[in-house]
Image 1 (cartoon, rainbow, N blue to C red):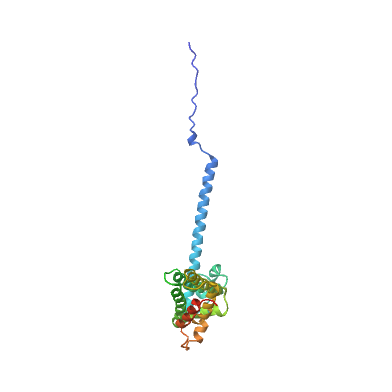
Image 2 (image 1 turned 90 degrees about the vertical axis):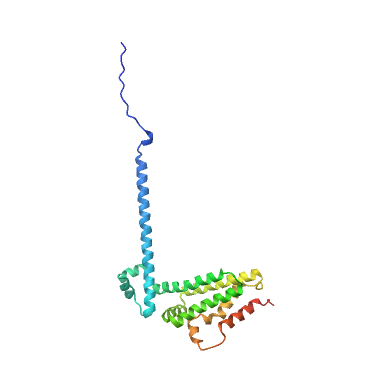
Length: 238
């Protein structure tokens, strides 16, 4: 008789289905990381929305009662929040003033950049740029006086944002002049200096205080001043 050898049934072991505790732990870490990042992103978006909303309400109140008379409490009341919450986003009322001013100046800079990138001669783009800046400030003076007062304060008190704005407009003007020099429309020269000279010559037409002081002066007109500057640009250096 053949002795039967008993065989124990060995459970099947599928390597593909093996559970790796470290792998599970890693997946959990990834999920937690993704959730944390999503929560942080949503928090940042909410903070950005709140920041923008404060600026929007402040601008509206500035137009109604002026930036000097508008308080942080006024802004907080309109937003149904506490003044302390407003101070979470702006360390001081002056920072809100600057934020509103940045929005106003940013629109001017965006229009200037659009003009600089437009087709046409450099001379025409210079006319369009200076004319657009003058038109914006003149309209503020005539029809949006309280915003004009805010810009005036930024100029008179020499706010850093106003200095940066002036530098940006001059840089855009320099860009146009340089393109005119490169194309042969203007003689080759110092485009940066030319931009500063033109900006200085035309400043009375966009400076908030000078607009008021020279309101009754019929000449020189903006067109005459720009024409004078363009004539100087086209002259060959001695």
